[in-house]
Amino acid sequence: MGNKELIDFAYRAMENAYAPYSNFKVGAALLADGRIYTGCNIENASYGATICAERCAILKAVSEGNKKLEKIAIVSSSGDYTMPCGICRQVMNEFMSDGIVVVTNNKEIKEYRVRELLPAGFSQADMKGQ
Image (cartoon, rainbow, N blue to C red; front, side):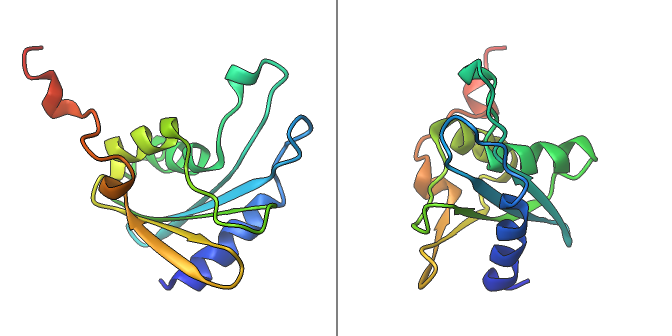
């Protein structure tokens, strides 16, 4: 699947965002083993309970048994490149460390490898003594 099509799915997912506190809506679309999983940010008055669009999409895929995560597109209401937060980068490192992150500013599309966004990320290999 091409980046443009995945971005279109992310924009549709962004329409479902619940962002009454920040008014910053985010959508994500994840390509995993030929299927598309979408997510949006869902805020909460207890800010720590907020979930990002990227994690929403990833957790949907994993909860349905799909762990072959390949590529994720992220868009936002800002109209600018929207990069994943640190927690999302760590979750991506867990499930798609060789995967691709796609972002856009509505004019250009950029791609990054998850490993570029989280160099030396914490992984199962770091837990050798356990």
